[in-house]
Image 1 (cartoon, rainbow, N blue to C red):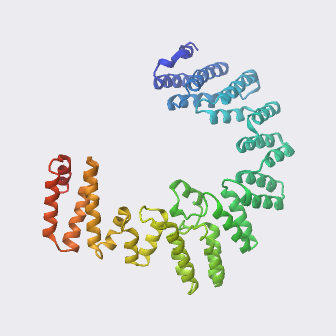
Image 2: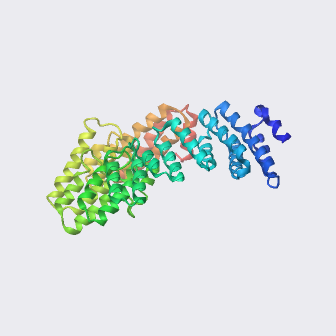
Image 3: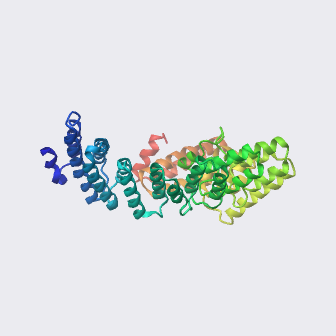
Length: 446
């Protein structure tokens, strides 16, 4: 106990060293009497948390030590004989949760919920959460869970039904109705959620998708897909999403490219030979435009003429309209149109699209350079000049790599080895004083 008190003003000590000392103190408490464990663990927590709160910063070693102390403390005071200590700890946790100038609010709240065991404690915690913000979806969820612990279904339903704005709120209410055996109410709540709720809930979509399959309801799947395409994180194919957003669709098809509603409708309509239905399906992706190369290829593969030509022309028209008259910049629309042109082997159209965008031009070098070496030679020499004028070793290194490709254009595609040597010699002479540039050229043997 004395050793803990030594750290009452440990602020000038190394945080890492202090954390090691605190962990050592906690470790030797295993065989100590219960009242000693409670007192010392609380003392450790009461030294660390005020420090983190006062300075408002995150410190992993100290936070880890605090988590260890709190986890064991919650277990220690679970028995009735420690009711006074539990009351004190609950008040302490609420005070620092309300202050919130630290990174441990979630851990404190989890401990508070675990400590709330008696009916009085549960109702007191509910009252505290309601004062903190019953408007919050997160707090309403916790309040409903605490009412469920109390067995108060009426109050639980009231908490779940309040301010239904987010899709996850609708899903929690639907789960409640499902447990009550009220399938119709659960279904209505889910449809309300996907049509009016904010945010995203895969559980809602999965529930309704399964219901549509069970009832063989193609119209329901169409409605569900329309709503899915409206979601901020729905609708774009996986290849167009960031890695974090791809996790939302991990349960999708083995190819992982499309939303499940799309796949179910596509397979059903194709099997039935329903061309009009397929056109209706693909039209959903046109306004606003949410097309990928995978979807474009699927349209080509599944639609017969003249429907295929009509809808692919609409896709191309939308892309060209998005790109507009601006011939610069690698927008998503420009990149997709380039992919489509490359897929269709429309090389002249592809070159016209990418010729003023060096990154895209370089991306299609293997396909276009043999056909248009002079275009590539001009673009790469301008890029090398720009990099050298920009100075810096990283620019020189990139310029040297591009020079290797310029050599390929001269020697392989134009059969002009002599001109390559003249060009390289003139470039070196013009930049004779740039020692770092010559070092980078030497590294690639130029």
